[in-house]
Amino acid sequence: MSTQQNSAEIEALKVVMAKYSRFGDTQNWTEFRKLFTDDLVYSVEAMPRSSPKAPQGATIEGLDAFVSGMGEMLAGVKTSHQMFLPEITLTGPDTAKSTWGLHDLVKTKHCIFNGYGHIHQHYRKVDGEWKISRSHTSRLFVDEQWL
Image 1 (cartoon, rainbow, N blue to C red):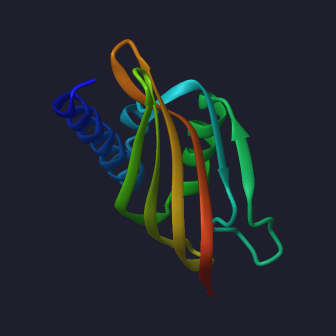
Image 2 (cartoon, rainbow, N blue to C red; image 1 turned 90 degrees about the vertical axis):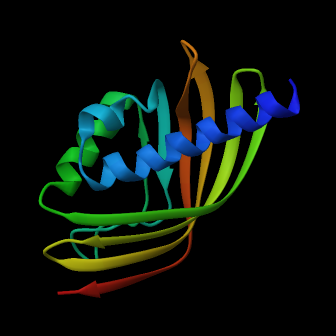
Image 3 (cartoon, rainbow, N blue to C red; image 1 turned 180 degrees about the vertical axis):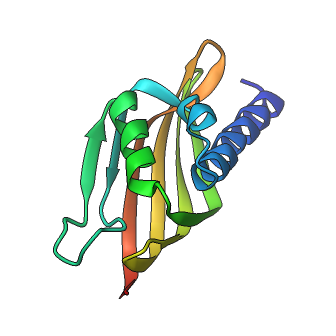
């Protein structure tokens, strides 16, 4: 792959992540869903919770379970995700991986959640479009303000 092609693919992956943030924060689940493969595996080490006793982490397998779960969890919730400083590697003609710096602010009726860490993605091209096939959010620390 030429340097120019490599750069174009990396820019395309940046657009996927921009859409991930925007469609998730605006709760546009129809467009959000288009960013993932059907066999998606999503995991998070610490996430917003309904109570201090609820589990901090989760793993979800499958696109349908992930999108419906996000819709349920975020109904009536305000979020803002900022992803920055990407490290993107093309691992093959149709595969890639990345690590992004992450700060997310999530305001629920029970808690204000600030998460700081990294989001690690694996991508696969499907019908010529980059899609997220694996996603893992690791946390350096979280700040939960219970209301």
